[in-house]
Length: 256
Image (cartoon, rainbow, N blue to C red):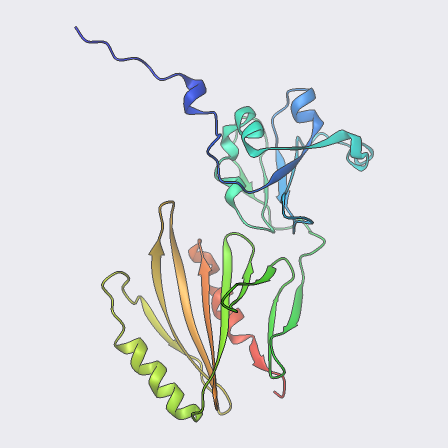
């Protein structure tokens, strides 16, 4: 008779291969008093090594949380060994707020908790273009000049092409490319147009996947004479489709 060695729980749940999201600021009640978290939220990080997550048991007083000695910075694996139920939540984006009623109950998303950085702001893209976007998004410029905004679970890539062609000609070229795109790896799920007398907007929706998940991508082309502003909106949850559409529409000419 052949026996198979049973995997140890420790090897299955050490979480050492968890994605490097940065450190978690955690109430010391979690570690010193061995209490499981019941409330956490993710703010815009203040430094690269900070994940933005703030984790509490829910029993801290205001006086307790105001004392910096009552919290510490820990690796995600340290907290996940205490509470594995946080595995998926810790991958949620900036602005996420979650709570549960007991140690054994499920987590639910909180929508009425005010975060300090959660407000809309207008960014100047060029002398002509602006974008209205939530201040929670982190902004960087990639090596190829692409402007990149992200919260972690929602992202935008944006680049402007300067071309010596009229708006109508650029529109027809973009429309042709969308209609005739190669769908071998990703099928066009929908097409969109939000054009007016001053700006042409045309785009399409697909799904892509990597080794970890399937996500949605809305590609948008915003067109005027001699310029095509190309955007790609990435979002994990289907409920964020409206965010992608509205943000695309909120890319505007300053003269409008």
